[in-house]
Length: 357
Image (cartoon, rainbow, N blue to C red):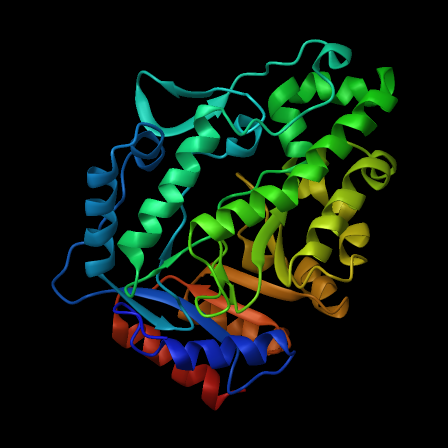
């Protein structure tokens, strides 16, 4: 397969295939974008606003400008995800995506469930605006991307994140104690939607074994890949998580060929051992959260993940920080996503890793 913005796509495909086989081909993988010489950096603005309002020409023009200004080096694959917003999975169940009058850069949903007995069973609403728009978005973006870049899998804030958006996080926390049998049913309803949502996006976006799949955490594989997560997990005890959340994450990981788990904030750390015990989770993205030391300084967490056989995404790091981390971490399973200012710097990182692996 050839991609205009990734002439060496087949080399990257080969490296990713080795990665998923547990092999370190020449060095840890490096997913890095560098600016083209004499090109200003491009920021894609109002991406959720444009998508939810069907402003396709404006959206695609920005995507093209961003692609034209970037070099996709190492194992970086050019892609764009057809997202409507962080809580779009909840929108598929009838929640309305809201924008602030002062900002079109992000959106949210307001809780809509006040009584679980009246709300259940939860059903994927295939007639609502968000579902219809996202499928149209996928089809249009796939046509626009053909032969040039890939369409990525959407941000899937599924399982308890969806319930939190529909009910409100504080209310949902109390519901685990006040009406646990209803929350168990709600979780089953949401879990049943994961596979059909994924498959509908996969089909509409033209994904296949030829294109492979990629997600907002930019790992690529030939089969079905996605980032899985439950940010809400930081608000409950390990006991509640084991009953309601971990089975959902295990189910999602088992459906996918490969996945990375987004693990967010110190409040999630009491659940780390349980997360690492899920065999089908391939890799971890550890996000310390606002106000915390940067991710690369949490060596105890990173090494614990490696000891459990999980890969790691090491993001927002400099060349100097990579030199330090490479001495501390095993190269197998590591994917570096560094910040660079030039192609020269990116290639220097890759060359250094190859010499020192």
